[in-house]
Length: 44
Image 1 (cartoon, rainbow, N blue to C red):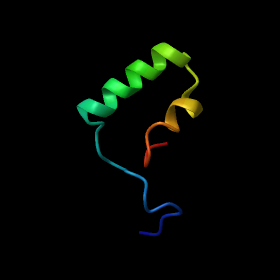
Image 2 (cartoon, one colour):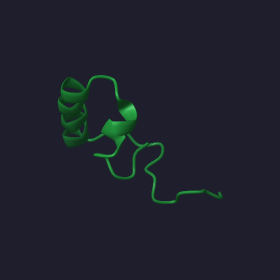
Image 3 (spheres, rainbow, N blue to C red):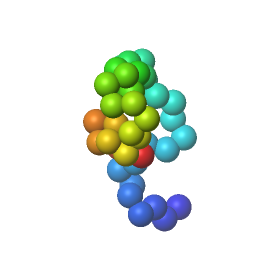
Image 4 (cartoon, rainbow, N blue to C red):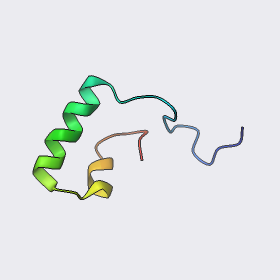
């Protein structure tokens, strides 16, 4: 399969650590998902 960004994690669930980070950042930044995604390498 051709991918534009082969470094992206696709088809896998968030780890417990990633979930914790997302919740923490969402509390800090609100629903600014583009900004939050910069803290999660390999995720969009």
